[in-house]
Length: 100
Image (cartoon, rainbow, N blue to C red; front, top):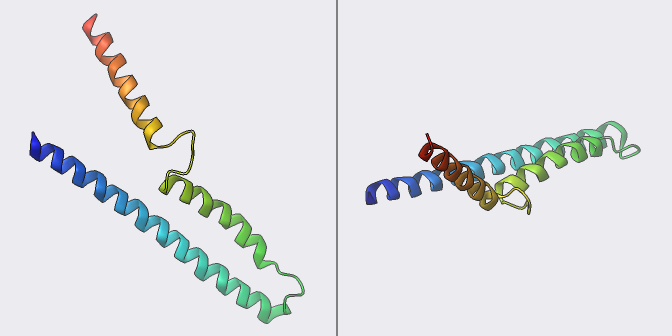
């Protein structure tokens, strides 16, 4: 029983580390690509029209959404909410199985 609990904790920690790696990879890609686009923008027309900001804004929304999920910043549908709902549905299933 204790080994199952330890394995479960290890698995959750491993999944958390994977989530963080994915987010930081996403953020690194964003910085490199947007930085490259900014340099290209400056080289092509010298800031007369900063078109790279459109890409930065659009992709930035995705980065914010990813950060919200990774760091549990959503006050409505966070991990605690998920756990409560899972527990609620499991209890409902147990209740239904009792009456069968």
